[in-house]
Length: 261
Image (cartoon, rainbow, N blue to C red):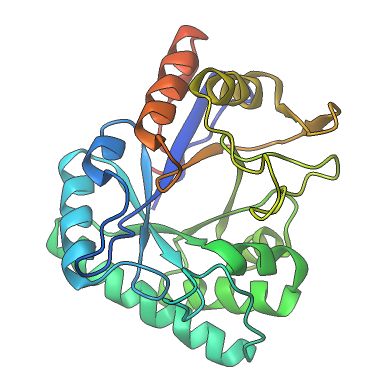
């Protein structure tokens, strides 16, 4: 797998968390989001998603030439993967490997494959604060396919381990989430953590892509040296947010391209 070099200003990847339906329970509009993003973080069945959903979303992504990423999680369907689990790193490694294999099977059937790995929810944050869990996630990805890219928080142990293993670390920022001044996300339990105004989200995306910074809740600038911008597929009005972000980036003459070839 060859990795595209994204210029400091001029090009950015758009990713979204998709495939998060489960059984008769639906969430988000995967097909509409796939028309707007360049990379799709597809749930692998541990926090959301099921075999038929994985097949459908992988095929829809392949049809649109959208890159497929495995959005791996703790085994936490009931909590949507948003609860921290003090799991043994070896067990976590195997859980990630299991999810990778499951999603890649459907990606291969769709004529493509998994290009990268991104942790979901509480596991994403644990890969910032718990180096042993970060190492487990990166190690599982490396065991499965050393050419995989790893998508995560800037400066996180996850990206450091991926880099040390010779994998491609890809830093991302969130256009629809509020930041604290230290660069961490405002917890979802706090007011204002999720931003749903399309104009505001689009302006933040343009700032991330052109200035490499985002404004924190206290008004201070936060530096975000990233190659991808995430828009959550389960955010209220996600499609409108993604359309606004794409339009804003295009108006600012920012190229929108996947970070992998």
